[in-house]
Image (cartoon, rainbow, N blue to C red; front, side):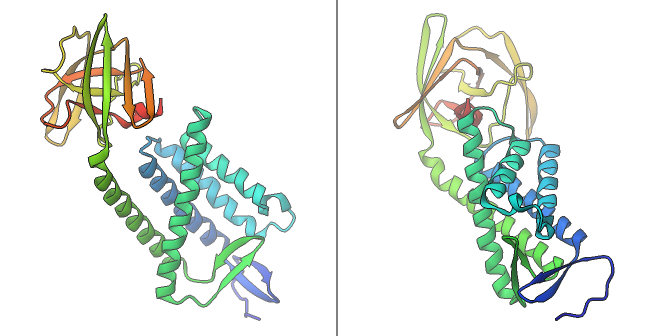
Length: 280
C-alpha cells in the first residue's frame, strides 16, 4: 500500500492497493490532450472550427476524465456512456450540420484518439512508466504530468507531420473535373483541390473557387478580399447558376459557391477549389 500524505488529492482503490490521483492534474492533462486531439481532428478533416468551441469541448473532455472517481455514475463508464460523451464533444467542437458530415467528424475523432494513444504509448515505453492502472474502464498512467504532457505534445507534432506528408503525397491525385454554369453558358475545366484555399465570400460565407480569368468570360458583381503571405487585395467574382464537380464515381452539384477570377499558373488545372465545397 502506498503511503498517502498530501491532503489536496483524491484516492481510489485499485487492485487491492491505493493509488493517489491529483484531481487538478488529471483534469488539466486530459483537457490539454482532448484539445490536441480536436486540433488534429480539425487538421485531418480540413474543417474550420472556432477556438472557443474547441476549448469548450476540451473542457468537457477534462471533466469526463474525473469519471475515474465516479463509482455511482455507472452509465458514464459504460461503452454507451463513452460514445455519448464523445458524441457531445464532437458536437460542441464542430457542430452538427448534415448527419453524414457529423458522423464523419465523429469517426475521425475516434481515429485521431487511436493515433494519439498509439504514439503516446510508444513514448511511454521509452520513459518506462512504473505502472498502468485501469479503474471504471478508464486508464490512468501512474507517471508525472510533465511526462504525459510532453508525450501528448510529441504525439500531436508527429500526427500533424504524418497528415502533412500524406496530403503532399495524395495532392497529385486531387485533380477534379468541374463545370460552371451561368446564364445559359457553361465552362469545363480541371481544378485542383487546395487545402490552403480558405477563401469565402464575406456576406454569404460561401466557399470560393478561383478560376483562371483567361478560361471564362462572365460579368462579375462582387469583390472578395483576400490575404496572402505576400500581401492582400480583392478578386472580382460572381455567383454561378450552379457548378458540377466530378471525382471518380462521385458528383457534387451546388449553387452555394462563388467564382473568383484570377491568374492560375498551371498546365494541369485552371481552377483552385476550396475543400469546403466538397462538404456542402
